[in-house]
Image (cartoon, rainbow over all chains, first blue to last red; front, side, top):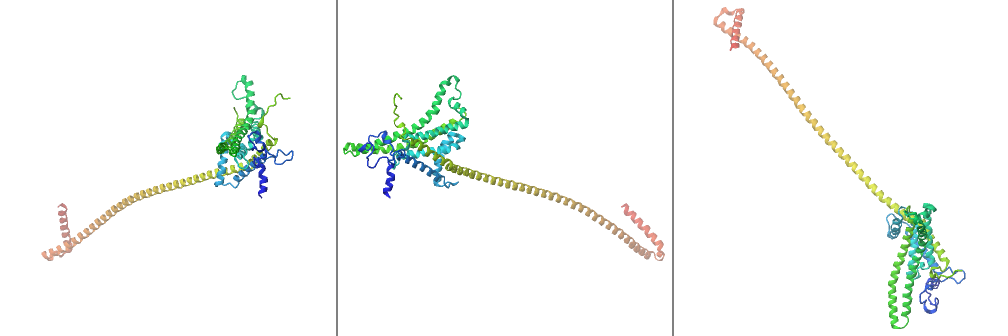
Length: 279
Length: 176
C-alpha cells in the first residue's frame, strides 16, 4: 500500500526526496526560475506537458467542485452548520463582490465569479499545503488561461449587451470627451481596456505568487542548507531563517487569498464597465 | 529576423498545456457552478425569503382577523348598549304612561264612586225623608187624634192638614 502511495505522491512533491535533480546535490540552490520547472510524470517524449503541476491543478479543480457540490447538497431553509459555512463563503462572493459591483445583473455572472475565486484560492493555498508546496499560478500559463477567460467574458458581455460597434465605441471613447482629443484618447483607452486589463490580471496573479514562493524557497532551502552546514554561526542563522519562514508562510496565505479576491473583484469590475450604459 | 531576442523569462509558459489545462479546468468548475451550485444556493435563498415573507403575511392576516373580531365585538357591544338604553327609555315612558292611566282611572273611579255615593245618599235621604214624613205624619196624626179626639179621624182632612204642616216646616228649614 505505502509504496504504491509513494509512487503516486512522489511525482507531485516539489523537491525530489533524493535531492538528485535541479542542479545536482545542492537542493536547487540558489532558487531561481528553474526552481519552478515542472517535472513530467512520464519519461515518454511528447508527454512532457503531463507534469506534476498539471496534476496539482486538476486536483485543485476537483477539490473546488467537490467542496461546492457538497455545500450545495441537501440544503435546508433553516441552515445546518455545514450549510452556514457554505453560505458565509457564498455570500461573500454573491453579496460582497457580485451584487455590489454588478448590481441587479449579478445573477448571470455569479457562477463565473464563484468558480474563479474558489479555483484561484485553492490553487494559491497549495503553495502552503505540505504535499504540493507550490502555488499553481506561479506557473504563468495558468494565470494567462484565467485572464483569457475573463477577457472573453467581459468583452462578450459588453458585445451582447450593446452590440459590437456600440460596445467598441463605449470602451474607447469615454463619455464627454471633446472630439478633438479622440485621436489621443481612443488608442489609450483601447490599450487600457483590451490589452492592459487581461495582461495585468495575469501578471499580478502570477508575480505575487511567483515572488512569494521564491522568498519561501530562499528562507526554507537556504535555511536548511545553513542549518546542516556544520558551522555554528551558520546553523544559528539557518534556524532563525527557518523560523522566520513561518511568518512568510502566513504572509503568503494572506497574499494567496488576497490575490484570489482581487482577481475576482477586477473581473466583476471589468464586466460591470463593459455592460454599463455610460462611461 | 528579430534584432534583439528579448528574454521574457518566466513570463513565457513552460508548456502550452498550462494555458489549455488552466482554461479547461476553469471552464469545468464554472460549468459545475452554473449547473448545480449557484442554482442550489439561490433556490434555498428564494425559499427562505418566501418562508419569511409567508410568515409575515400570515401574521398580518391573523392580526387583521383579530382586528375584525374586535371591531365586530365592539359594534355588538355598542348595539347592545343602545338597545338597553332604548328598552330603559321605553320602560320609563311606559311606566309614566301607566301611572298617568292609573291616575286617570283613579280619578274616574273616584268621581264615579263619589257620584254613586251622592246618588245613594240622595236616594236614601229621599227615602228617609219620605219615611220620616209618613212616620211623623202618622205619629202627629195619632197624637193630634188623641189630642182632639173623634173629629179628626177623617183621613182625607187629616192628610191635608199634615201636608200643609209639613210644607210649612220645609219652608222654615229652607229659609233657615
